[in-house]
Length: 79
Image (cartoon, rainbow, N blue to C red; front, side):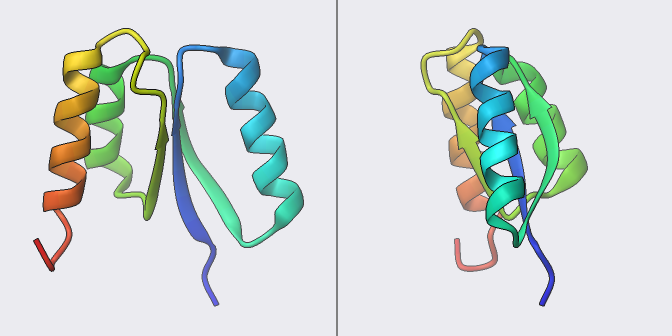
């Protein structure tokens, strides 16, 4: 079975690092990208096409973060 591809989006480096280590320790996950603002998250979702985005909705680029959430949900075939 292929790992679940995850994009981490949070403006706190230490928090992202902790999530990355946690996911690695759990197994079955592959962190495909990490980002600290909403605009960059939007770009990387298009580039990496992750299965899951773990995103802080209060990070810089909040408007882009909300847009990312809508686009990610609507990019799925069921949308």
